[in-house]
Length: 146
Image 1: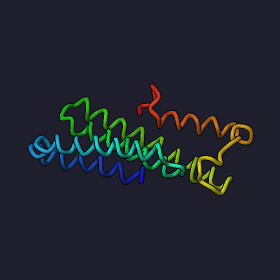
Image 2: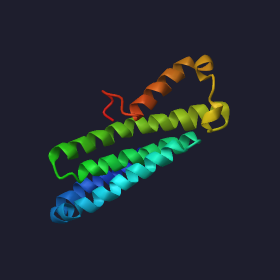
Image 3: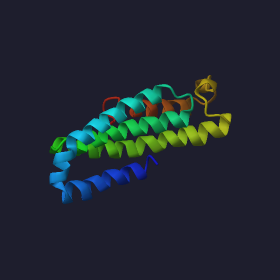
C-alpha cells in the first residue's frame, strides 16, 4: 500500500486532475485541503494510539499522504515540488519500515506488539541502528526529505 498505491494516487493527481482540470482543481482546492487537514489530524491521533507496529507505520503513512495532498492542492510550484519530494522520500522510508517491522521483527519475536520489543539493542545492535534511522527519517528529521 505505502510503496505503490499511495504513489499511484499522487501520480494520478499530477497527470490527470491538475493537468486536465485546472479550473476544477482551483475551485475545489479549499475543500480538498480541509479534508486533508482533518485526515492529517485524525491519522496522527490514531497513530499515537497504536500498539501494533504495522498499524503504527500504516497510519503514519496516511498522515504523510495527507501532507502530500496539501502540497499538491496548494496551487503553487513549491507545494507541488515539495509533494513530489515527500512522496519519493516516503516511498523509500515506509517500505523499509514495513520490512523491518513485518519481516525481521515479526519473524524473530512472532508478535507485532510494541511492548514486547525490549532489549533489541542487546540482541540485534546493527538492526537497531537501521531501525532507529528509518524511524527518525519517518518522523521527519532534517536532511531526510520527510
